[in-house]
Image (cartoon, rainbow, N blue to C red; front, side):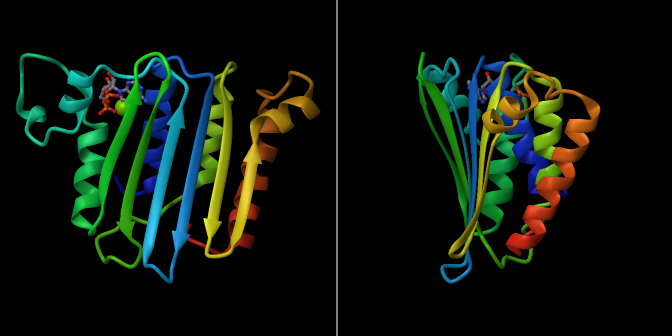
Length: 181
Ligand SMILES: Nc1ncnc2c1ncn2[C@@H]1O[C@H](COP(=O)(O)OP(=O)(O)O)[C@@H](O)[C@H]1O
Ligand SMILES: [Mg+2]
């Protein structure tokens, strides 16, 4: 995929499919350490150990006996290409955390892309889910918690005007943060 933000959208969709009520998306850019780390954690149903093993098995995509998606193996391959990797910690009934790491300056690393679009896409259609987003760039951070917006909007958060405002607000904060876009 051309943008990591699209992979993050895919990870969030996995969380929603797993019945999550809260998704914590954290992006940490540590330029001194040359690291870009993305963590997506949910409180959904989690994965059985066999499932967990199959979703990160590099050969499982060649299987034809079972339909399993490509999202995680593709992201894992992209990270490994950039001196990084993907790890999943999951507990049945409690939730799942996917962590993916890249060398920040790797030539093959896709740009982060628009987190404003990704967050707006998640919140525009998922009425039940709350998102806590944190983007750190060196010693600065931008934090957005959908609960705070929901409180202000008194239940009208999915209104197109509010989603549009949200998109512009996040895009502006991301620009001010001065990290990857
Ligand atoms: N956050 C999650 N919680 C529970 N199960 C998950 C989660 N993420 C992925 N999975 C499981 O791993 C499978 C593979 O995910 P993925 O590679 O994104 O492909 P797809 O979403 O197209 O199935 C999912 O179908 C689901 O069973
Ligand atoms: Mg998926």
